Image (tube, rainbow, N blue to C red):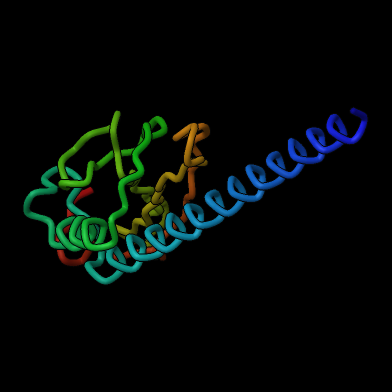
Length: 155
């Protein structure tokens, strides 16, 4: 009888560590995917030299970002922090169910830097266990380089 109870405890400990390892693997894979998405969004904004936050339907950078999200099956969404403009997977403004969030930060405080802005980017990832689904939601954020708005891109 003693060996049967001991075997049950060992089996439960093994199952616990398997679940713990699976959760860690899921979290690290999701973090890596979110980090790659954030870097791609930053590169696309820098390549386009800014984003038109007021009219995302006509913005080439937003269209390229949305295409990338769809091609790579990035489906994680979240709520944007205060001050950020959120976009859903279709490129529409949506701060409650956003795939990514952008916030322009103006650095035109001096004469040597007229019309200069950088963008803060936030994307989301989740701890997603196979049985329990989404448990925790996390954010990955980053900044673009300082961009001069000589092309008339509005922020």
